Image 1 (tube, rainbow, N blue to C red):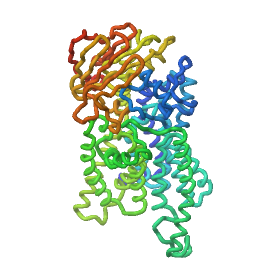
Image 2: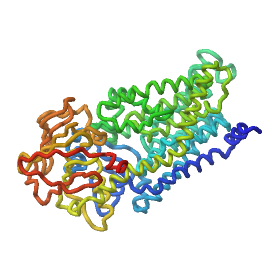
Image 3: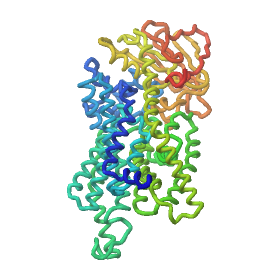
Image 4: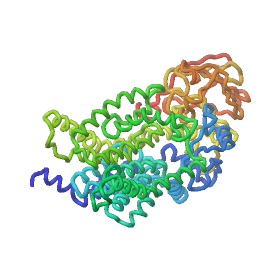
Length: 619
C-alpha cells in the first residue's frame, strides 16, 4: 500500500481519537510545573481558614463573583484597595460558574498546596475534551481519515496552551467538554432517532452552561446543525414519504419538528439568562468585559472589531493574544490587518472544499461560536469552541481531492493547504508546550517577584501599602494574597493604594505639600489593558474629579488629549506621607523596592516600567 494510503488508513483507525488525546496530554505535561498563577492566588485565599473576605461569594459554588451589584460591598472593596482608585462607580464583574467553582473548592479545601495535581486535573480534562471533539468529528464525518486528521489538529493546537495551563481557566475546558458531548448526543438523536440523546443532549448543554458562560457557544453548533444537518433541515423541502410531501406543508412540518428539537435548549438558555440577571451576574464599568445585553450597542461594535481578530487567530495568523499588547486606540489596526487574512483564507476554503452541508455546518458553527467570545478582549484562550469547526474545515481541505479545479485554483488551494500544514502541524506541535512554558513565565514570574520582594511591614494589620507605580493593576493585590497564603501566621494590610501603572513614557513625581504626592504620566494613566479592566471610556474622567477613600483622596488635575484619561493626579493623605503606617513601594525593574519620598517642593522624573523585563521576557 502506498504511504499516502497507509496514512489515511491510520487516520481512519478507531484508535485515532485516543492517540490524539494521549498526544495532547503529553504535549501539555510542562503545565504540571506551572504552580499558582494570577487568579489562582486569590482563589486560594478565598478558602484560607484564617481569613474572612467579604467578597460577595454566596458559597463554594460562587467563586467567580468578584463584584456584583451590591454597592456596599463595592465600597468596602474600594476602601481595602482591592479595586484601584480609578475603578468605575458602576463596576461589576461576576460570573455564574458553579461547576468549576465547586471543583476549585474541592482542590483548595482538600489539598491547597498541590498545584501540580491541580494542573494534572486540567491536563487530563483537556485529554477528555479531545476525545469529545473526536466523537463529534466521527458523528459528522464518519470513521474517516478526515475525522482522524481533524481531531489530531485540534489536539495539538497551540492556541490551547493558556486555557489548559491556567488553573483558574478550567471552567472553559469544562464548558467545552459538556458542550461537545451535547452536540454529539443531539446529532445522534436527530439523525438516528437515538432516544437517550433527547435527554443527554440538553443535559450536556445545561452542564456546559453551569460550568461557565462560554457554554453559550454550544448554541452556535446546535443552530448550524438544525440548518444544515438535521433530518428536518430548515430551508429544504422533503421527499414524499420522508417527513412530509414536498411543498409548503412539508416544510412547515420540518420547521416545527426542528423547533421542537431545539426547544429544550432554548428553554434552558432563557432560564440561565434569567438566573444570571436575578443573581446579579454580568460585567459592566470596565473595558475588558462587555455585557452583551446591557451594553448591546457596544457589544455589536466589539463583534465587528474583534471577530476578524479571533478568526485569524483560529484559522491562520496572527495570534489573538497580540491584542492585549496594543496601546489604547490601536486595536482597530489589528482588525484592519486581519480582515484581508480572513477573507483570503475564506476564499481558499471556498475554492478547495465541496460546498456541501457538512462544510456549511463547520463554518457556521466556527463563526457563530466566536460571537459570545467577543464580549471580552481577543485571546487565543477563547478558541476552544471555534477550534471544533475550524479543524473540521482544515482537516477536510488537507484530506480532500483537488479534482474539478482549474490550474490557478488548484495552485491556490495547494498553497493554502501548505500554509495550514506549517501553521497547524509543523509550528503547532512544538509551540503547544513552548507556549505553555511562556504562559507560565508571563503569568507567574512577575507575581513571584512581587511576592518575594514585599517587605515584612507590608503584612502588618495596621499598615497601608502605597504603590507609586506597578507593572500592572493586578500584581500588588495578587502578591499580597500569595504572600499571606504562604505565611504560617500573619495578616493582610489594612488597605492597599495603587497610584499609577506607567509602562510607557515617564512618570513625574512632585510633592507640593507635606501630605500630597502629585503624579504626572507623560502617556497618561489607564494606558494598558489591566488598568482598563476597571474603567471604560464610557465613564471618562473630568478635571476636578475626586475619589475619596479612607485616608486618601485622589483628584484629577489634568487630562490627556483624548479628554478622558488622567494625565496628572494629586493624592492627598490624611497624615504626613512619612507616617510609619504608610509603606511606600515602587517597582524597580524586577521587584518592589522602598520608595524614597521627595521633599516638599521637589520634582522627580522616573522612567516607565519595562513590562517585558518585569515579567521575565527580557533580562
